Amino acid sequence: MLEPSTPRRIATAALLALCALMMVSAPALAAGSQDGGPIPWHADAYEAALAEARATNRPLVIDLWAEWCHTCLSMKHTVLRDPHLAAVADRFVWLAMDTDRAVNAAALAKFPPEVWPTFFVVDARDESVAARLLGAASPEAFVAFLDAGARRVAGRESPAEEAARVGDMASAGGRYPAAADAFARAVKAAPGDWPRGPAVRVAWLNALYRAGAHRRCVDVGRAELKAATRGHTPAAADFVYYLHGCAVARARAGAPLDGALLDTAIAAVQAAVDDPAAPLTVDDRSEARRILREIHMTRGRPEAARTQAEAQRALLDRAAAQATPYAAMTWHWPRAEVYAFLGEPAELIPALKASMKALPDAYEPPYRLAWIQLKANQPDAARASARAAIERVYGPRAARAWTLLADIEVARGDRVAARAALAEAVAVWKALPEGQRRASARAAAEKRLADFDAETARETQR
Image 1 (cartoon, one colour):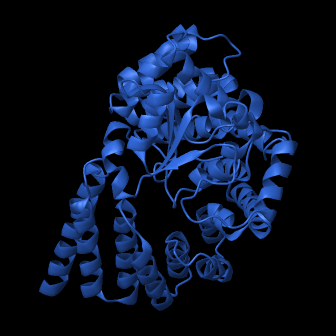
Image 2 (cartoon, one colour):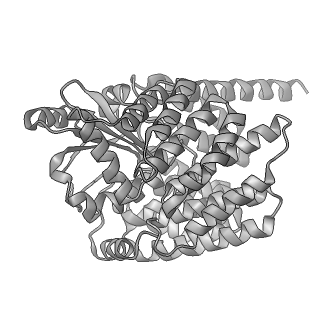
């Protein structure tokens, strides 16, 4: 689940075999394509999809994704092609929207992503949200999310589903305390075996984390850890991610770090990682190991963290070696991050160069190549790669590309070029249409530019 930096999440034996076969034998997909699975997708065409949903009296399912989002690509290549979805595909109209494309800005204003990916089931009659899902899910959990949305549209929503939907809408509107209260009601009203239970518990902890209610977040995390990690679904690592974040925030505020709780959380996620039958994709398992690594570092156990990183790297390297170029792009960021953590960023450069050659229109390969080259202390090469990414990138992601170029120019010692790149990043945020604007991101870009100018002025006066 990406925020732009957040958690993420091998499938059951059958699903893993299916995905491996698909990745090896299927032709490479064009960036942004949702073809190749059981679902007939509309791509970046909200009005057309809505019209079909209304004409056929079916709910509309929306997938908000982006090329840079590894969890989005993982869901696309695995869960959204799973046979479980084939059985229900004709009950819905399906729409995939690249959140970086301006053509989707108006629809994004109605259905804003809270993390990447975000999924909605929408009642086409009035465009109201019937259900929402954040991040990754197992095939079974995804079908449960679809069923909840369909029941809402049909007027058969259960009390637990209603409370969860109210919480989703409050969270989407930034009303996180109200969202947390609604999610609490949903969990209380639901049966113990509620298929949506783990995902709703993740949303509950996410709302508490975002509300700054760190003490309550830790208390809820402690009480709900067993239920949230039951079944070893993708929700297990996501739940522990937010629990860890709240525990660390409390410690920074002066409270003692609850080491026993974090060790219990480590054991719960480790059990999911070690379960070969767990309904987890490669991306899910990789993300779980990254979260374990972060908690081990918090607990002062760098060797245990390195063990997780080495296992994560081996997992991702195997998956990338078996995948088509487009499918392999799923793991560019997790591989780059873990190679950098292990102090070996240069070792990934050949693979990223090969990806850039194989996918000449995609911005993600040159962007990640520039990042890893900067980590490998190759700023001149990184500058060329960043420029290549800027030529291909679009929408909000362009601001990230310009900011990366600014970092590279600083490393090269060219403050004039760095300042120009930061100004371009600010200009991107200012020019975005409604629906793609993020006030906090624009403010951060403007602050960085102002801080850069202030630092330059101080250096000039010395």
